Image 1 (spheres, one colour):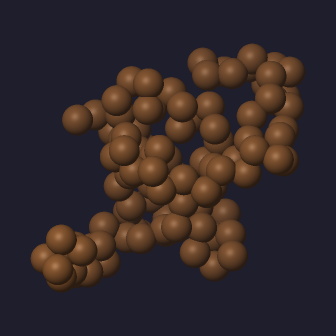
Image 2 (cartoon, one colour):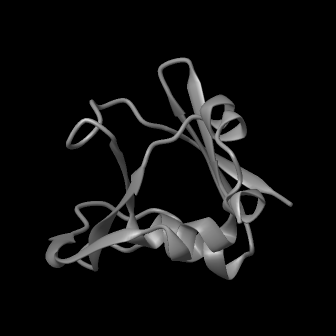
Image 3 (cartoon, helix red, strand yellow):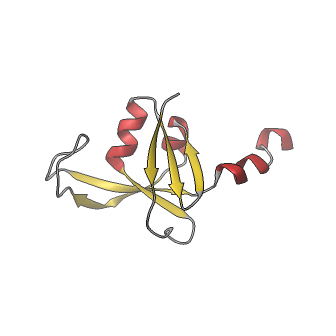
Length: 101
């Protein structure tokens, strides 16, 4: 599986949330790619299913793109998508729900 990388440079929202733009998430889901998010020295891996199932979408606050890039044209609307940041090392230490039952 392919992954794109994203450097989260701002502080975590509400102390634990990273924010991606909707057009980034939608593109990765369509291309069946995941995203590896780096925050300081920690990495969180989001698979395509994680991108769709674990998202906290904020569609009420839409933004207008100021620039054109490969995913969006100037003037198009997008929204922010939040994910709870769980470092890959921490995730491996947590017990799997399937093994608990």
